[in-house]
Image (cartoon, rainbow, N blue to C red; front, top):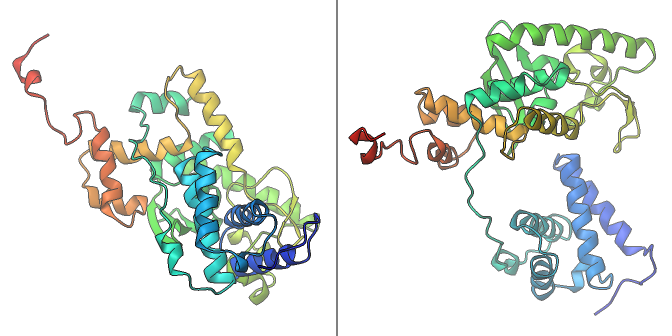
Amino acid sequence: MSSIPSQPDSVAAPRLLEQVRGRIRFKHYSIRTEQAYLDWIRRFIRHFGKRHPKDMGAKEVQEFLTHLAVVGRVAASTQNQAKSALLFLYREVLEVQLPWLDDVEAARTPKRLPVVLTSAEVMAVLARLEGSHGLIARLLYGTGLRIMECLRLRVKDVVFERGEILVRDGKGFKDRVTMLPASVAAALREHMERVRELHRQDLAAGHGEVHLPYALDRKYPAAGREWMWQYIFPSANLSVDPRSGVVRRHHLQDQTVQRAVKVAVRAAGIDKPATPHTLRHSFATHLLEGGYDIRTVQELLGHSDVKTTMIYTHVLNRGGRGVVSPIDRMGLA
């Protein structure tokens, strides 16, 4: 078998990674997926002395995934992400149909019940969050949005007149509609007015352009500076777009929201490993507790399969299936 030269900057590996990057962007995968896939492919190549993936097969893939689990002791979700990256490499870039890759056993992710806050705990957390972080947290709990769905919202996605939020390209590249809570609408309007003033300042300084999806910037060169395309939760600083090199104002980083929620949970004295995603879990659980049917909750959450939504029935106040225990009917104190 031929091998890639062992010097740090081999010719073949960067060329292959550029092909991977190009294919990922052609398929409109997110920048995070791009970074993760490239990292796993690099690690795969380095693990076998920089041999070219075309010179390897089922044995090497199995060995690499096993190494991650046994030596690296990575989580099942991490191992499955590595497998997805290698699957993408062979099928989409090298255009090699390898039936054996389907037979490589994926690590089983343990089925764990989600962490859910009570209504009182949610109120305690929200009371300790201010500014943009507080508004984002209220939206997460009030709409069931995932954190990145919230941070990627653009001006055009909020329809105040109809009380709707349009979620574009959610998980699985699916669009959906969820409600805009009436109690959040006024604060969101005021926030967006402040963001609009920031956008005016950016335009006056020669900036004001935002990233557009699906190469719309080539079709509509001026659209990136229009108000309707701006992020509702922009970053405080301008930054260089890693794909285009253009200086833009991106949306807030999710890590800042994660940290703010963690601090609020600790300050509220809540002994649960709650995160921003916990607010989404709490949204679903509290809707079911309020008597809404599971199909409605499924649609609001954007789940493809109702079985995914069913997990919230296991964390309701009255047990796994809403059953009242016979001991509770005895009236024992």
